[in-house]
Image 1 (cartoon, helix red, strand yellow):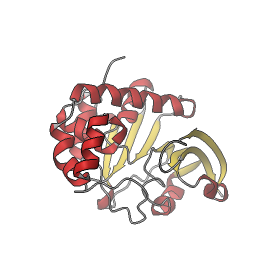
Image 2 (image 1 turned 135 degrees about the vertical axis):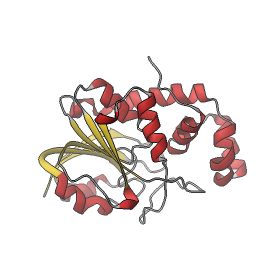
Image 3 (image 1 turned 180 degrees about the vertical axis):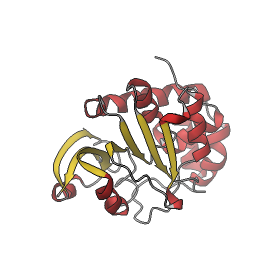
Length: 230
């Protein structure tokens, strides 16, 4: 397996976005000193960059395989809350002529809170780092666009596939994006996201398929693939 190229700043950002990348020592440090010091200090200076790069690549490969059957042959992707973009990097590398548009926050909160956030005030990303990660892993600028959520400048074209892995309806309410999604989703478009309330969407979409179940996590979420608003 060829691992992603992550420097220390990218490894720190990936760790904050994916706490499962932390080893037992780091998890213990976070528990003792709290999330503020963990976010500001320990997540940057007490990490093994090589190990995080390897683990992040492995996890993204697993995520890619989870949704592979829905995305092969598709070309135009929208990703909401992608983090540093590991899954999207695999899409761009494995699917020829594919393009990805990203909608992202552009700051990291002083104290990251994991879990539901109705007001969507938490930030987990750095758009310059996302751009650097894609370029540094040999993706040309012509194949992706990055949109800042807080500038309210979203792409207006339609997409084949829309992704929001552990973001939409996992950290914040689906309704924040519902009006926008109705505008850009074609009848054949597929929306894939993780939710803590899968049954709620049976009344929202005509088609729903459970793609993945996380029963051993705090939120016990399910990844669902949806098609066609009712």
